[in-house]
Image 1 (tube, rainbow over the protein chains, first blue to last red):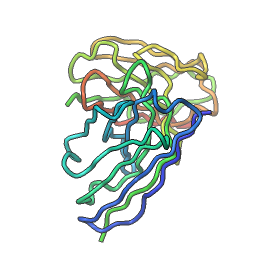
Image 2 (image 1 turned 90 degrees about the vertical axis):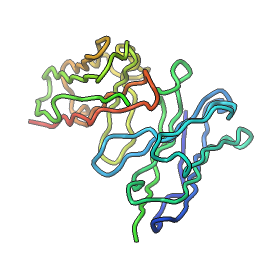
Image 3 (image 1 turned 180 degrees about the vertical axis):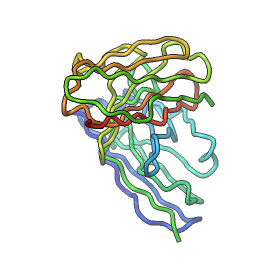
Length: 120
Length: 107
């Protein structure tokens, strides 16, 4: 069974930093690209960042470029999101999602999410 | 960025009803359209990929159709477990973008 478990969320002040982690199990992690998708309260999901299976291709939504960094450790079956210079508008539930093999932006498995609240 | 617009934003239906949700893209996206179901407090779950492909484990009462800019998700014979919010997502260009959602409520 595919499992994705996020951790690292919490309350942070504007301008602060957080590091989210996602532990994967139940599938061959090395073969799959991974994404982070966030969802602000009462809003639609928003794609945030992508990392290829090898880690050599990375992309971000414009609103987080220069502030967020995605990385992965295939030896530990994990993907991370380092978030710096956080803003109130970054407040959301952050989901780790597995990208389908046939289409990189099709999210066929999701974690339970971790809440990030940016507030003073 | 490609804008995705769903209609209606919400609807009321009864068990056994046929429900149709529409998603329109601001430019052509071929068949690069997915549908997700989300229940309160849970992550979205993939229902339909590439406009009409049924994800494994999803009941056959769910179906999708469309090409270009207009797409439809149909739920035949709505079941109690289907009351949820549904989102479309385009994967034609980066950034991938979602519609605003359609909430299916019990009449």
